[in-house]
Length: 218
Image (cartoon, rainbow, N blue to C red; front, side):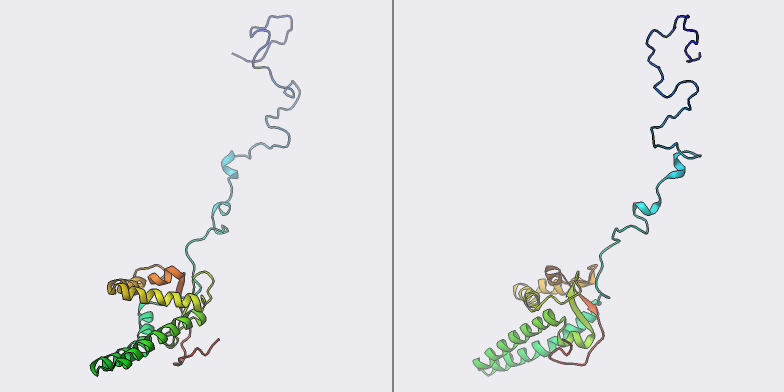
């Protein structure tokens, strides 16, 4: 059945006096049919599927989305970090233990006190160096640098002291906790110790330097 209304106005309208399908203005005879509003365009040949947005607009290669965490350099391996720690331990821990043992064996209380003071002062000094310059003597020999994971810069002497204190507290509270702290880089994605995570630091590879108790590059 055709939906075209009767052309003879004298004939009765079988659809009633006010048909609901009445065409809107602009659709009369002789006028081009424009089913879209002013300024709109009909879909291109082939349908809407031919004008889909490009891939780059929704996370393609031009997208600003980040693909993962970024660090300011090549992360040091656990073995490299352990080697740097060992060199520092030879400077700090070995003399402290020897002096304390000699003092305790000879019942020389003053020597034992000197040993404790020496160990504390050297530990603090090295921790401040790591925070202020990014390295301790052992780290400089191996070629390591401790920096903030976001800025790539040293964290400052104060935060370096906090980082070293966290290691010391872990050792004093529980030796197992200290061992876990030291082994954490083995399975961590950023190769951080637990202390590194607290102060947001990472250890990266840099050119090695000759041994020096004081940083040469300021």
